[in-house]
Length: 227
Image 1: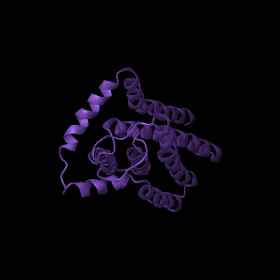
Image 2 (image 1 turned 135 degrees about the vertical axis):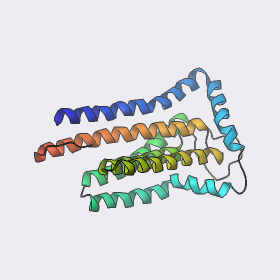
Image 3 (image 1 turned 90 degrees about the vertical axis):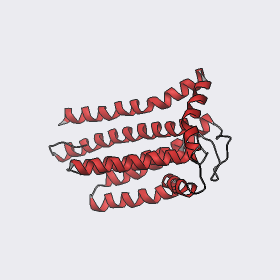
Image 4 (image 1 turned 45 degrees about the vertical axis):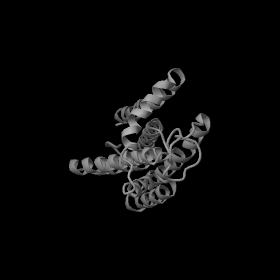
């Protein structure tokens, strides 16, 4: 069990590094060939911005609210309470709440302060201050919805259930990112950067959770697989 647990923990840590790769590539391209970033952003954002219609805007505003910090904090709190009372797991419930607060909140603000990228100079369809890179909404959506999906998949035994959990979480995450571009408050590379850092942070937390869960099982003298 110990060897398998170590392998799984290492697997999550490797995934963390892999998921951080797009973020690193964006930074390298910005430093070496900033025009590449500009062209890439235009290539992705132009077709999205061309679909702007007064009738569509309320839909995208509703979608972007799925990544708003107040909404997600309440959502995460409720899910953490569910984990605590339904699954009887203090580590899982407390860890899920803390990893969101640090990952989607503090870490994002630190990165924005470091890079200080201005927001797109186009019409913003919602009020949005602060810096642009990486997207806080995209990062929060990745950490929250992918994190919830990871926990629910881990606890589910039916493949069809796992499939729909992944599908639903992926759609939510994708549309939060698209909404940020549509509303004119983020570049596509901001969204990709948010996904990248959020995914890397989540994989790191998953690896740490597996490590502590392994220690707990060893201490209790229990055998079996986990994570």
